[in-house]
Amino acid sequence: MFQESEVVFSINGNKSSAFDMSSLPSDAMALLAMMQNATAPKPPETKINVSETSRDLSSVVSDALKQVQNSENGLVRSQPQAIKTLNDKMMALELLKVEFDPMKKLTIYESGVALGISTGQTSKKEVMEIMKNYSKFSFSENDMIHEYSDIAVNVYFSDEEIVSEIKFLERYKGKTSKGLSINDTVERAIEIYGQPKMKSPKGAIWDKFAVFCDRNIITSIRVQK
Image 1 (cartoon, rainbow, N blue to C red):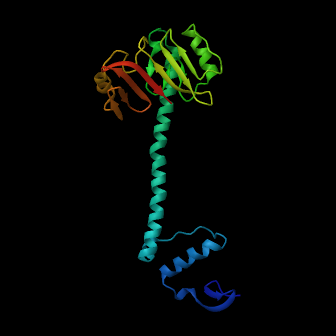
Image 2 (cartoon, helix red, strand yellow):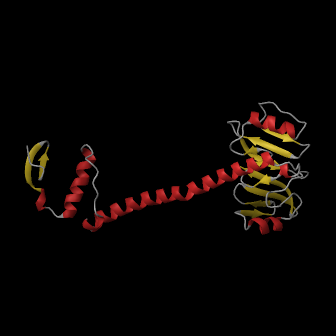
Image 3 (cartoon, rainbow, N blue to C red):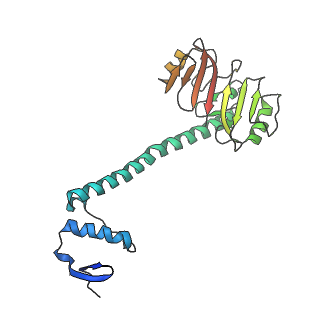
């Protein structure tokens, strides 16, 4: 047996030498501790002061800390956006529930809500029930696309039978919550929503919201999950 302050070196399992750990420089002690932790059971958590280690060891530890911090910062940035989107959808659904104006019932919410349907949340069965209030068309549970041509709405489903996309076509009578409608120009859309993430002669895409056009006139509006 040796004291906790001793370090023992061995060759093929045979004890070679031992010396007092207290005589080691602080950076060597930190490095040995890390080597021991790689093979031995993990001891109670301890903190290593990066400034007390050698330059090479310090850079390794600093890089690891930066990776953790960047990962955590990424979560911090994305979490509020996810919460905001969910809150926007919930608020839109509540507004549609209490709305009595038939035209406002057709409002397209940019967060991915329309007609009481929420992208990424509403199931196929729920859509079939909801759309009875708006359309004379009906579909089977095997259909992955529901084309309600009488009100100019297409609903697309994921493999899990959850709404992935809603598309509003030329004869749709509703507007977005910010006042954009079919037959407006793409310039008007950009004036309302700012510069899109992607733009071409065929349309413009922001985040979950997009418009498609013919000769610069909007012919359809899409919201996605």
